[in-house]
Image (cartoon, rainbow over all chains, first blue to last red; front, side, top):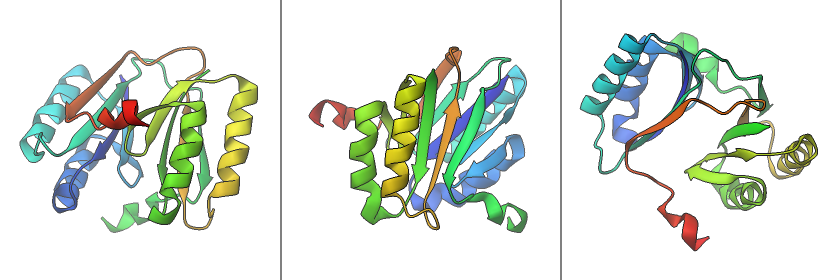
Length: 87
Length: 87
């Protein structure tokens, strides 16, 4: 399935979560990731995420697009994933 | 079409952009909006956005899902749009 994930979490947990997400998906922008996952990997990712979040403070939203991809992705302004190679 | 928009912009422009986006879409989370738009409204929104952004610093990503909606949306952690009723 194709998924888009974005998180809104406290700064002190950002790096840990970012690192985890990169194991499963592609980085799109600051706190946005997307990519293809099997159902098994998807469940694994969620379980790993939950270990790293403080659920009373943090928020992660996941859009599951099933097998369909979106029609288009447009970016207004700068592309923020230039750092990808550095991490 | 169904669109999901998220922005990563400088704090001083957040309120202005948030206010604009609420004219077109529903607020999901901090910097995430989604909803249904006609092609005309979509173009209008983009044009209004561009007026309010500094394109060399800000970044807005738009996913167009066409007429299909996503299969599911899941939230891990807290729902951050409790304020929705207040705005």
